[in-house]
Image 1 (cartoon, rainbow, N blue to C red):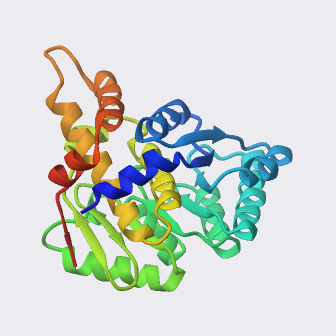
Image 2 (spheres, helix red, strand yellow):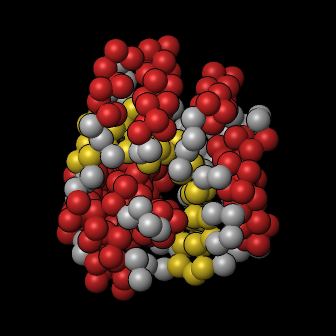
Length: 273
């Protein structure tokens, strides 16, 4: 059962340092608050070492890179490793440009990440060292389906073994894997792809879940992924006539806020392979 992972977040209220996407930074903060965590944002190189030192974990999202933020990512990441903090990489758009791809790969080479979360195209890019994405979205040819599920599970486990990181691949079917075990998650609705930032929110929330559940980070990340997908289902179900993606964004955050362990346990749709 995954609900105890959410209870631990609410009890411990972990502080998460986010170097994240400027497009979605407000939603990231609100989603983290909704699940019981606490956000702080800083990407200024002269500030990040102090900020990350007072937190329990670091979420690095490369969605809106610039020279300053890249420098801040490396400083904060190395300080977090030194302190033994949870560190997550969200390689937004890796494969879409040389800067994004090179930055993500260099981050992986110089920083130890507990978790790497992205769509399948981004994760394949990190695995291969090159790739293509449709902007920040996964290429259709890379989609995880029931037909290629066994192959994708093997890929996720293999990449986890290579990186010693938990690999979270999100899409229509979500995979959360270490080298031995994979959670295959079926929560969510297609309409979530019409909102900018659900992935960015999930990365911060997953960081909080891993901080609050240090003895089973794999289960914690799976719980975070199930919760986000379930919140999407609830939010979409509660839409009224005339409401669209803007309202859905708010309803997803509200659904996270109102979720408890029992509703997560009942609503989570997953199998372990």
